Image (cartoon, rainbow, N blue to C red; front, side, top):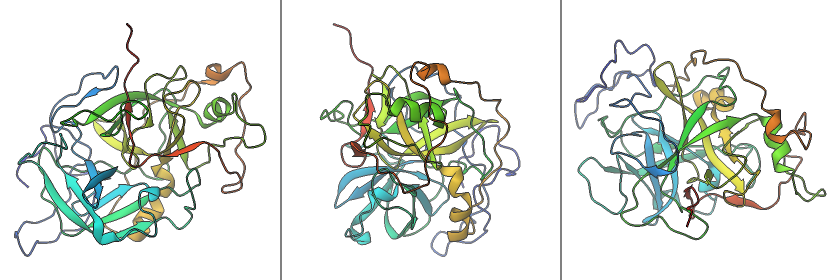
Length: 341
């Protein structure tokens, strides 16, 4: 494969199982150790430029030549993204995937491009805010792994990521409402803490229309800051929420939707990837979700919404229709911390 991450031993934590041989390259596609980056990463305290190769599973999904969504490389030929990035009336042949990109407006020898052979959207996805906002993309041909192109680990169905865990969301979208990321559009990163579903439900119903409440469904995950100001409310739809565990990074969530942009009491909402572990494996047998090492127990976080009484349970999937949802494709990005003047 060329570059191998330091400290990687036997590939016991594999991203995919098949061993094939590329007819064009003659390279064996053996199991690799997923979710490994080339160097240790320091704590990210706010929205900032990433370093080249820091998030090697991040991809840019283009439609008719324009960046529309993010995605995550999970094997040499498969990417995970959000279903709402792929409207039914869009032609699959018009999509391209950029891998190994760091600055979208600068050419780099580390970058490679693939067309999309097929898109498999979850059948339960109906509209922004509904369940099933997840899609599999098959690339036109396998990619060669490098320090800039590397898959992230898929969490198994029983994966547990505790409240308060610091995870990272990445993307190339807007940095504030209607404010595009400046050229050369460097990949942005933001560290965000996970928030429990109950507390997130509580927060989303503060100052909400009582006739049309928001509901965080069982296949959703929240992360962000109650005070707002910096968040992944528009963190490039389909892009990864990467969480660390046992020396590897796992695709805990997929950027899905948000209400307003970086507003107080409105954390970012993600598709909970582990919910769809069996669906992923059913569609692509070579993809093997991994058991996530125990990280720690969740601490109660109801104090984040203590004055409002958290909702104890969400209704059945698909029965509630949230309002003011932002489909997070096209105009997406990380909201930088507010600047003091």
